[in-house]
Amino acid sequence: MTLAIDVHGLNKTFGDKHVVNDVTIQVEQGRICGFLGPNGSGKTTTLRMLCGLLTPDSGSGEALGYDIIRDADEVKRRTGYMTQKFSLYEDLTIAENLQFTARVYGLDRRRERVDAALERLGLTSRRGQLAGTLSGGWKQRLALATATLHEPKLLLLDEPTAGVDPKARRTFWDEIHALAAEGLTVLVSTHYMDEAERCHEIAYISYGRLIARGTANEVIAQSGLITFRGEGPNADKLAHALAAAPGVETAAAFGAAIHVSGTERTALETAIQPYREGHRWNEGAPTLEDVFIQLMGRSEDNIQ
Image 1 (cartoon, rainbow, N blue to C red):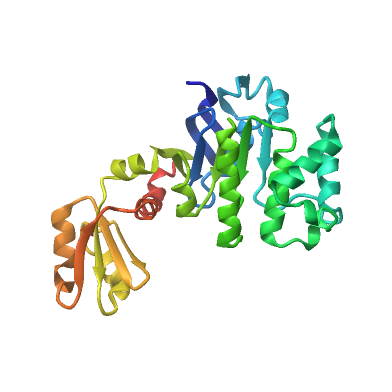
Image 2 (cartoon, rainbow, N blue to C red):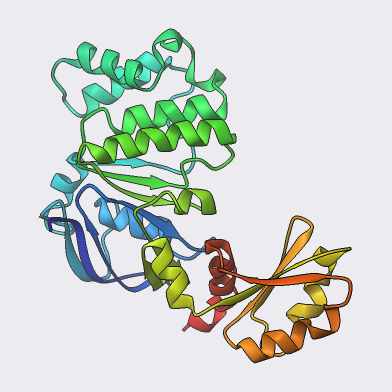
Protein backbone atom coordinates (compact mmCIF):
# COMPACT_ATOMS: atom_id res chain seq x y z
CA MET A 1 0.00 0.00 0.00
CA THR A 2 1.39 3.39 -1.04
CA LEU A 3 0.12 6.33 1.00
CA ALA A 4 -0.42 9.63 -0.79
CA ILE A 5 -1.29 11.33 2.52
CA ASP A 6 0.27 10.26 5.81
CA VAL A 7 0.05 12.92 8.53
CA HIS A 8 0.01 12.67 12.30
CA GLY A 9 -1.08 14.95 15.13
CA LEU A 10 -1.73 18.08 13.08
CA ASN A 11 -2.66 21.15 15.12
CA LYS A 12 -3.53 24.69 14.08
CA THR A 13 -4.70 27.55 16.26
CA PHE A 14 -5.95 30.98 15.27
CA GLY A 15 -6.03 33.26 18.29
CA ASP A 16 -7.82 31.36 21.04
CA LYS A 17 -9.56 28.96 18.63
CA HIS A 18 -8.08 25.49 18.22
CA VAL A 19 -9.23 24.92 14.64
CA VAL A 20 -7.45 21.61 13.97
CA ASN A 21 -6.85 19.42 16.98
CA ASP A 22 -4.44 16.47 16.76
CA VAL A 23 -5.68 15.22 13.37
CA THR A 24 -4.12 12.05 12.00
CA ILE A 25 -5.12 10.78 8.58
CA GLN A 26 -3.81 8.44 5.89
CA VAL A 27 -5.13 8.13 2.34
CA GLU A 28 -3.94 5.46 -0.05
CA GLN A 29 -2.79 6.41 -3.54
CA GLY A 30 -5.61 6.38 -6.10
CA ARG A 31 -8.37 6.57 -3.48
CA ILE A 32 -11.14 9.16 -3.14
CA CYS A 33 -11.62 10.21 0.48
CA GLY A 34 -14.64 12.29 1.45
CA PHE A 35 -13.99 14.87 4.15
CA LEU A 36 -17.19 15.56 6.10
CA GLY A 37 -18.14 17.81 8.97
CA PRO A 38 -20.21 20.86 9.91
CA ASN A 39 -19.12 24.36 8.95
CA GLY A 40 -16.23 25.63 11.06
CA SER A 41 -14.90 22.15 11.82
CA GLY A 42 -11.44 22.66 10.36
CA LYS A 43 -11.83 20.98 6.97
CA THR A 44 -10.45 23.87 4.91
CA THR A 45 -7.60 24.49 7.35
CA THR A 46 -6.62 20.82 7.17
CA LEU A 47 -6.66 20.86 3.36
CA ARG A 48 -4.43 23.94 3.33
CA MET A 49 -1.93 22.34 5.68
CA LEU A 50 -1.78 19.22 3.53
CA CYS A 51 -0.85 21.17 0.39
CA GLY A 52 1.68 23.50 2.00
CA LEU A 53 -0.42 26.69 2.07
CA LEU A 54 -0.49 26.69 5.87
CA THR A 55 2.15 25.51 8.32
CA PRO A 56 0.80 23.45 11.24
CA ASP A 57 1.66 24.61 14.74
CA SER A 58 2.63 21.05 15.54
CA GLY A 59 2.42 17.61 14.01
CA SER A 60 4.17 16.06 11.06
CA GLY A 61 3.68 13.98 7.97
CA GLU A 62 4.06 13.58 4.27
CA ALA A 63 2.05 14.21 1.12
CA LEU A 64 3.21 12.32 -1.97
CA GLY A 65 6.33 11.31 -0.06
CA TYR A 66 7.35 14.91 0.72
CA ASP A 67 7.44 16.46 4.17
CA ILE A 68 4.48 18.88 4.37
CA ILE A 69 6.56 21.39 6.33
CA ARG A 70 10.13 21.08 5.07
CA ASP A 71 9.18 20.31 1.45
CA ALA A 72 6.06 22.49 1.20
CA ASP A 73 7.08 23.92 -2.18
CA GLU A 74 7.49 20.44 -3.66
CA VAL A 75 4.08 19.43 -2.33
CA LYS A 76 2.49 22.51 -3.91
CA ARG A 77 3.97 21.70 -7.31
CA ARG A 78 2.49 18.20 -7.27
CA THR A 79 -0.90 19.02 -5.78
CA GLY A 80 -4.04 20.46 -7.33
CA TYR A 81 -6.22 22.57 -5.06
CA MET A 82 -9.76 23.69 -5.92
CA THR A 83 -11.06 26.30 -3.50
CA GLN A 84 -14.64 26.53 -2.30
CA LYS A 85 -15.09 29.96 -3.90
CA PHE A 86 -14.44 30.39 -7.62
CA SER A 87 -11.03 32.05 -7.64
CA LEU A 88 -10.08 32.39 -11.31
CA TYR A 89 -9.99 35.60 -13.34
CA GLU A 90 -13.53 36.43 -14.41
CA ASP A 91 -12.38 38.99 -16.99
CA LEU A 92 -10.29 36.37 -18.82
CA THR A 93 -11.68 33.72 -21.14
CA ILE A 94 -11.67 30.03 -20.28
CA ALA A 95 -8.64 29.43 -22.50
CA GLU A 96 -6.80 32.49 -21.15
CA ASN A 97 -7.27 31.30 -17.55
CA LEU A 98 -5.78 27.94 -18.47
CA GLN A 99 -2.91 29.51 -20.40
CA PHE A 100 -2.12 31.74 -17.42
CA THR A 101 -2.09 28.70 -15.10
CA ALA A 102 0.23 26.87 -17.51
CA ARG A 103 2.69 29.78 -17.37
CA VAL A 104 2.53 29.97 -13.56
CA TYR A 105 3.54 26.30 -13.36
CA GLY A 106 6.18 26.74 -16.07
CA LEU A 107 4.67 23.95 -18.15
CA ASP A 108 5.94 22.94 -21.55
CA ARG A 109 3.62 22.18 -24.48
CA ARG A 110 1.23 24.80 -23.10
CA ARG A 111 -1.11 24.98 -26.06
CA GLU A 112 -1.30 21.20 -26.29
CA ARG A 113 -2.04 20.88 -22.56
CA VAL A 114 -4.68 23.60 -22.64
CA ASP A 115 -6.40 22.07 -25.65
CA ALA A 116 -6.41 18.63 -23.97
CA ALA A 117 -7.87 20.07 -20.75
CA LEU A 118 -10.60 21.87 -22.70
CA GLU A 119 -11.47 18.68 -24.55
CA ARG A 120 -11.51 16.50 -21.44
CA LEU A 121 -13.86 18.78 -19.50
CA GLY A 122 -16.10 19.56 -22.47
CA LEU A 123 -15.03 23.20 -22.61
CA THR A 124 -13.70 23.42 -26.17
CA SER A 125 -16.78 25.12 -27.63
CA ARG A 126 -16.68 27.72 -24.85
CA ARG A 127 -12.94 28.41 -24.86
CA GLY A 128 -13.48 32.06 -25.84
CA GLN A 129 -16.18 32.75 -23.25
CA LEU A 130 -15.36 35.04 -20.33
CA ALA A 131 -15.13 33.09 -17.07
CA GLY A 132 -17.32 35.63 -15.29
CA THR A 133 -20.26 34.83 -17.57
CA LEU A 134 -20.26 31.09 -16.84
CA SER A 135 -22.94 29.35 -14.78
CA GLY A 136 -21.95 27.52 -11.60
CA GLY A 137 -21.56 24.15 -13.32
CA TRP A 138 -19.31 25.51 -16.07
CA LYS A 139 -17.22 27.47 -13.56
CA GLN A 140 -16.78 24.21 -11.68
CA ARG A 141 -15.50 22.48 -14.82
CA LEU A 142 -13.06 25.32 -15.51
CA ALA A 143 -11.80 25.23 -11.92
CA LEU A 144 -11.23 21.46 -12.15
CA ALA A 145 -9.46 21.85 -15.50
CA THR A 146 -7.17 24.46 -13.93
CA ALA A 147 -6.49 22.38 -10.82
CA THR A 148 -5.46 19.36 -12.89
CA LEU A 149 -3.67 21.12 -15.77
CA HIS A 150 -0.20 20.41 -14.34
CA GLU A 151 -1.06 16.72 -13.92
CA PRO A 152 -0.91 16.58 -10.11
CA LYS A 153 -0.73 13.33 -8.15
CA LEU A 154 -2.92 14.68 -5.34
CA LEU A 155 -6.13 16.69 -5.73
CA LEU A 156 -7.70 18.60 -2.82
CA LEU A 157 -11.26 19.81 -3.39
CA ASP A 158 -12.99 22.16 -0.93
CA GLU A 159 -16.76 21.75 -1.32
CA PRO A 160 -16.40 21.86 -5.11
CA THR A 161 -20.06 21.31 -5.98
CA ALA A 162 -21.74 23.75 -3.59
CA GLY A 163 -24.61 25.44 -5.41
CA VAL A 164 -24.28 23.27 -8.53
CA ASP A 165 -27.25 21.45 -10.05
CA PRO A 166 -27.52 17.63 -9.73
CA LYS A 167 -26.65 16.91 -13.37
CA ALA A 168 -23.48 19.02 -13.17
CA ARG A 169 -22.57 17.33 -9.88
CA ARG A 170 -22.89 13.88 -11.43
CA THR A 171 -20.77 14.89 -14.42
CA PHE A 172 -18.15 16.29 -12.05
CA TRP A 173 -18.03 13.09 -10.00
CA ASP A 174 -17.78 10.92 -13.08
CA GLU A 175 -14.65 12.88 -13.98
CA ILE A 176 -13.23 12.56 -10.44
CA HIS A 177 -13.62 8.78 -10.59
CA ALA A 178 -12.00 8.72 -14.03
CA LEU A 179 -9.01 10.66 -12.65
CA ALA A 180 -8.76 8.35 -9.61
CA ALA A 181 -8.76 5.35 -11.95
CA GLU A 182 -5.62 6.85 -13.50
CA GLY A 183 -3.92 6.96 -10.10
CA LEU A 184 -4.86 10.43 -8.83
CA THR A 185 -5.57 10.64 -5.10
CA VAL A 186 -8.49 12.87 -4.11
CA LEU A 187 -9.46 14.38 -0.75
CA VAL A 188 -12.79 16.20 -1.12
CA SER A 189 -14.85 18.05 1.45
CA THR A 190 -18.61 17.88 0.93
CA HIS A 191 -21.94 18.24 2.69
CA TYR A 192 -23.82 16.10 0.16
CA MET A 193 -24.47 12.57 1.39
CA ASP A 194 -24.85 11.14 -2.11
CA GLU A 195 -21.35 12.46 -2.87
CA ALA A 196 -19.95 11.02 0.35
CA GLU A 197 -21.35 7.63 -0.63
CA ARG A 198 -19.49 7.83 -3.95
CA CYS A 199 -16.15 8.13 -2.13
CA HIS A 200 -14.03 5.06 -1.46
CA GLU A 201 -13.81 6.13 2.18
CA ILE A 202 -14.82 9.03 4.39
CA ALA A 203 -13.40 10.98 7.32
CA TYR A 204 -15.60 13.02 9.67
CA ILE A 205 -14.10 16.01 11.47
CA SER A 206 -15.91 17.94 14.19
CA TYR A 207 -14.58 21.07 15.85
CA GLY A 208 -11.07 20.20 14.78
CA ARG A 209 -11.13 16.56 15.86
CA LEU A 210 -11.31 13.55 13.55
CA ILE A 211 -14.04 11.41 15.09
CA ALA A 212 -15.02 8.87 12.39
CA ARG A 213 -13.05 7.15 9.65
CA GLY A 214 -13.64 4.30 7.19
CA THR A 215 -15.86 3.33 4.30
CA ALA A 216 -19.46 4.56 4.40
CA ASN A 217 -20.63 1.13 5.57
CA GLU A 218 -17.93 0.99 8.25
CA VAL A 219 -18.81 4.44 9.59
CA ILE A 220 -22.49 3.49 9.73
CA ALA A 221 -21.64 0.25 11.57
CA GLN A 222 -19.33 2.07 14.00
CA SER A 223 -22.11 4.48 14.94
CA GLY A 224 -24.12 1.73 16.62
CA LEU A 225 -27.30 3.45 15.44
CA ILE A 226 -30.68 1.73 15.34
CA THR A 227 -33.21 3.49 13.12
CA PHE A 228 -36.98 3.28 12.90
CA ARG A 229 -38.81 4.80 9.95
CA GLY A 230 -42.32 6.09 10.54
CA GLU A 231 -44.89 6.72 7.82
CA GLY A 232 -48.46 7.93 7.95
CA PRO A 233 -50.48 11.12 8.34
CA ASN A 234 -48.20 13.99 9.44
CA ALA A 235 -45.43 11.58 10.43
CA ASP A 236 -42.85 14.19 9.48
CA LYS A 237 -44.34 16.57 12.06
CA LEU A 238 -43.50 14.25 14.96
CA ALA A 239 -39.80 15.13 14.89
CA HIS A 240 -39.91 17.80 17.58
CA ALA A 241 -41.77 15.66 20.11
CA LEU A 242 -39.73 12.52 19.46
CA ALA A 243 -36.40 14.35 19.62
CA ALA A 244 -37.10 15.14 23.26
CA ALA A 245 -37.89 11.54 24.21
CA PRO A 246 -35.32 9.62 26.32
CA GLY A 247 -33.00 7.47 24.24
CA VAL A 248 -33.68 9.31 20.97
CA GLU A 249 -30.48 10.78 19.54
CA THR A 250 -31.95 12.04 16.29
CA ALA A 251 -35.44 12.50 14.92
CA ALA A 252 -35.55 13.96 11.44
CA ALA A 253 -38.14 14.28 8.71
CA PHE A 254 -37.34 12.58 5.42
CA GLY A 255 -40.00 13.85 3.05
CA ALA A 256 -43.36 12.77 4.49
CA ALA A 257 -41.70 10.14 6.69
CA ILE A 258 -39.56 10.36 9.83
CA HIS A 259 -36.34 8.64 10.90
CA VAL A 260 -35.92 8.11 14.63
CA SER A 261 -32.49 6.89 15.71
CA GLY A 262 -30.58 5.99 18.83
CA THR A 263 -28.34 3.31 20.23
CA GLU A 264 -30.79 1.74 22.71
CA ARG A 265 -33.52 -0.34 21.08
CA THR A 266 -35.80 -0.52 24.14
CA ALA A 267 -35.73 3.24 24.61
CA LEU A 268 -36.51 3.83 20.93
CA GLU A 269 -39.45 1.42 20.97
CA THR A 270 -40.78 3.14 24.09
CA ALA A 271 -40.43 6.54 22.43
CA ILE A 272 -42.40 5.60 19.30
CA GLN A 273 -45.04 3.53 21.13
CA PRO A 274 -47.49 6.46 21.60
CA TYR A 275 -47.36 7.10 17.85
CA ARG A 276 -47.88 3.55 16.59
CA GLU A 277 -51.62 3.95 16.10
CA GLY A 278 -52.22 5.49 12.71
CA HIS A 279 -48.58 5.23 11.66
CA ARG A 280 -46.48 2.43 10.19
CA TRP A 281 -43.10 1.85 11.83
CA ASN A 282 -40.36 -0.33 10.41
CA GLU A 283 -36.81 -0.83 11.50
CA GLY A 284 -34.34 -0.15 8.74
CA ALA A 285 -30.64 0.22 8.22
CA PRO A 286 -29.45 3.70 9.23
CA THR A 287 -28.34 5.89 6.38
CA LEU A 288 -25.13 7.88 6.22
CA GLU A 289 -27.27 10.98 6.70
CA ASP A 290 -28.67 9.51 9.94
CA VAL A 291 -25.08 9.08 11.15
CA PHE A 292 -24.12 12.56 9.97
CA ILE A 293 -26.99 14.08 11.96
CA GLN A 294 -26.01 12.00 15.01
CA LEU A 295 -22.39 13.17 14.81
CA MET A 296 -23.47 16.80 14.38
CA GLY A 297 -25.65 16.44 17.48
CA ARG A 298 -22.61 15.29 19.45
CA SER A 299 -20.28 17.92 18.00
CA GLU A 300 -20.33 20.31 20.94
CA ASP A 301 -18.95 17.52 23.14
CA ASN A 302 -15.67 17.86 21.24
CA ILE A 303 -15.06 21.53 22.10
CA GLN A 304 -12.09 21.86 24.43
